[in-house]
Length: 370
Image 1 (tube, rainbow, N blue to C red):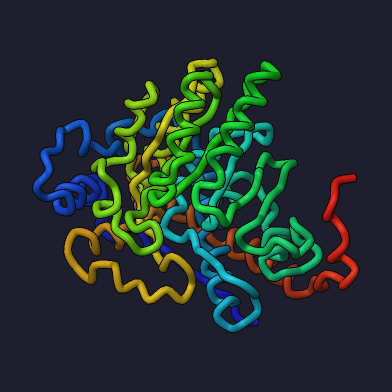
Image 2 (cartoon, rainbow, N blue to C red):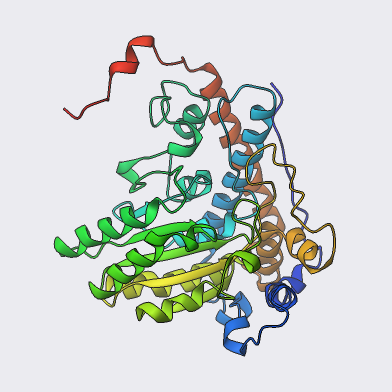
């Protein structure tokens, strides 16, 4: 069976990635007066990478490649009819899930979205059981009943991907309330897209988290288009992070293709939550490599200009260039990580393909709690 094998050479002049989100915002919000603070998007060059160890860098690069290989192979096997249902791919956004979840433990909770494979991989989800679930096999995390949009693993603190736009807000806020009530130092992280930021429960849950001072971090993955509607058309506020002011919590914008920047911003927010200092809203500016769903014609994307330049920035290349420049990892070490990731994902695919489909009687199982 054919597997998708990818490679990143690095050295493709990714330095311009730092300015592109600000330039894109200024272009798309013509006619609006934007302050320097509104436009600013944090990068590794602002925050530094000195506090990241060699082993942490290796682990995070492996996670990003696991996500990329997982998603591109999912795309391939969906295209040839081996995966049922729909798939919404996370390719291009790997640095966000990886940078955030690198600061979490198994006791911390995350809530996800319909584009949730990357979150689950980054939180430690088993690649074989995840792939089996997407293939609809009985060995999957949900015994093949949930599929792509409903992957969950409570042992890893993964409260589940969610087919409802904005469906994670209440779950994450409730989990954070549970943590505070039990006096733990565990936190909850809610991943959501720019489209979900316009749902009513976004505001309800940020307000509730603020007045109860809950240990929750809201992470907006702003890939600019929700499904296909541009964020600069659908949002009355130029940024999503600025909405934090209304709920008396910090709001931070970060370059979502810069792993080290995401890691550092998330680290500060998560440590703040653990200390009992309350919630934070993070807006990570990103761009998805593929459409809203696999098969989307993507006619809403710009074929050239600043938007296309931003689309072409690859988080894996940004990382590779930065760690080699800083002498954190060598080219050989990076290549070894890529090879291991390819092997691990190939093993997951073999496991899924060879696993049985659920038996008919399984329809009546797991309907009610014991």
